[in-house]
Image (cartoon, rainbow, N blue to C red):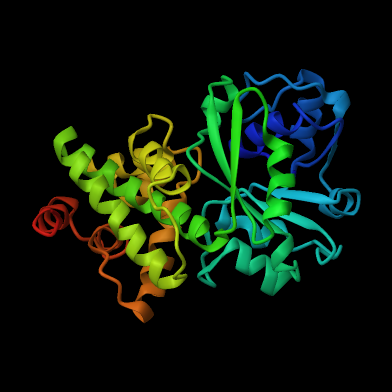
Length: 323
């Protein structure tokens, strides 16, 4: 496991339902010490108890990579490059699963493509974890469904066995590009849902917004990677719904703060976790300068966050474009 936030902690809980041992990269030695002493992550999902005898912690990423065949990366996309900057061990012979729902900001690349082009991981060895699954509900062992994407479907099934347990059901797909881009875009849509909620729009409007949002996601992913896919499945629509509606959604929370009048900076400072959509909307906006897909919701969020347009004005303009 590469990462120690809430999602990394939740996935580690799933893994240890099946695995005899886990190598876990945690950057801060003080957190490792506290983790070993208390049996839980001192910073995230502190109610989840771990048998630390089954975990080898290390703040040396090379040690963790060297001693592991399968790597699961669960670090916010904006910080992935800095997290791997000291990595000297090769990833070319590793199986790498991305649990990151974001883009590499300065390169506007999905994580799978970046791992392939920059780290030499063969495309067929890359897996992606997607689907509607908040870490907080995993901690409570509430039934959740995840989709594992890999171009090698046989390998996707093997990956899925690592995390399937009594409270996690899994399915597989070969659509690594669609699932990654959809997971990125649903965070943008959740920011929009939060902004409108903060402005006082009700459930009737939210239903219209989200029905337009899934159409916008479909237009974009079908343009970027045109294959046959069922956009109504849980990896796409399900993930969008939970991120737009859930109380645990940090992107919706971030958007709601903007709608209530917080500045972008003050909203970020008050939140303890990263809202991936903040970075994603800039990257998607820049990517779409090439494709020119009709994306009014994405444009609305971009104009509010980066164009510093008033949420009241921008959202009013968007309401005239929805149907």
